[in-house]
Length: 364
Image (tube, rainbow, N blue to C red; front, side, top):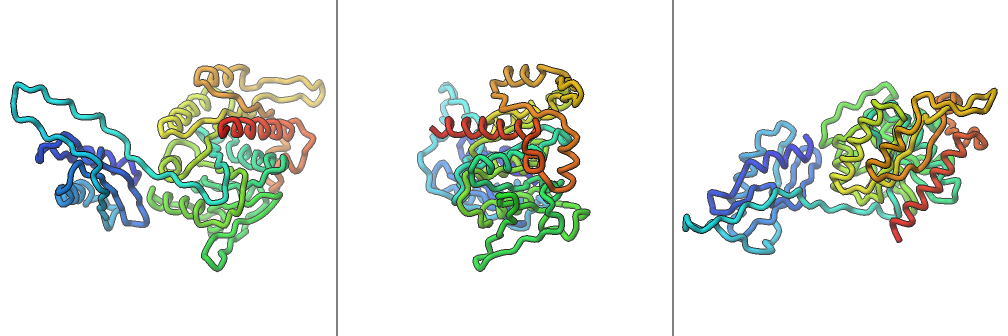
């Protein structure tokens, strides 16, 4: 169950029977789902409506199969909402536009910047980009963590040669991330019995797991926490938007039309939930022929630039095609580590520098 499902259900319940032109969704201040317990905080338009609102919430959401308990809470009303005027000749004030609920976005203690790496679709090399970007930032002297939030397809254990690795907890029950190549790394893959074990979770379970990965992990002091998101625009992205203070998102695409069509949706989604898009990374941009050193644009040239220009985005950099990337990734060696003098590694280091500059300018 996604938070948006709750909002849509609450929109159908109004307070018109007590003379107030508002629906319940407009009164929501916060929504949380922990396990099977749904907690909703409302700001009623005036005192004395708490029991009415609580009853309407139960009517609207009581039959949701994922919810075993609904905890309805209230904050003190900030202002009185005028009731309907009974005189027919007086023009009624139109009801206000339905607003999205206000959520408390929290900072992860000790982490300066959280960068979400996303894409519109799978298969564009997003996880490989996130992994090598994190390593490149570390090589620039930053303290970096990498969170594999692609819960349905965690690939970070493979990319870093950490298959079968398990995490431990400290005396305060905080998760201790695995360390390799100077990074602090955490993945759902570290908690599965085997790499073949599927993740069959609904939205609330995803929300809970992701929240614990962020706020119940001993990250220490980090300059950057790079998050490898699942492809698309689902529950993980919504959970981040509502609960975590992100510095911004980086979108990864290839020059193909099918990839660009979906990355546009990802950009629109990030902007819809007020997450800044820091830039776009063009992966598999071209191939450098070993014999003549010429660049060959196998998937076309200029399409990503057109897309970035149309959406007002900065191109952080372009990464060439290199068979060594896949080969070394399968062996758990990021290309930035295994072939630091390659064109691909140089591209990642350049992108890391540009990204750090973009973040610095945004902060200042």
